[in-house]
Image 1 (tube, rainbow, N blue to C red):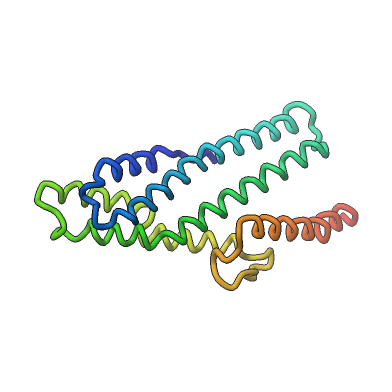
Image 2 (cartoon, rainbow, N blue to C red):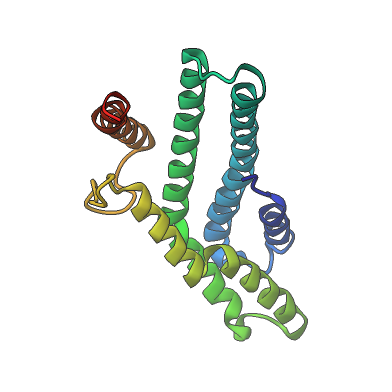
Length: 191
């Protein structure tokens, strides 16, 4: 499914336009702007990967009706790229959540702002909470847990986000290859 970058771009712009209001938490703001910028750039890459996979799918189902080795390898390469991007993004966001929480806490303290700034502060806090709030954090942790489990549902890391992106991609693709050899090939041979 395609992903939109509009919301994160609006939030980046809002944070940049109000940097003077956020001066006491400026270092955290810079990190969150960087995090959002990574998400916006990755969205373009995710959508390109999605489009390329659709093209492979169309070639198989609409034209050749055959999954060739070339198409298989191209598809695997795209999936590896996607897995690496999404894991590194989730990991980066997870490791910087405390910066967003610091900004949200600051924005929700009305004592930090004069009367006409309070509306802007609440608006920014609400937008940040949508991406980095408690519900988003719980969903992110759940996603990372899903990424870091084997096919039997067992964790292959001790803590979330422990692996580098390269280690993660190498591990899950080796795991998928082993599962393919163990199960799919067996099932194809013994219907």
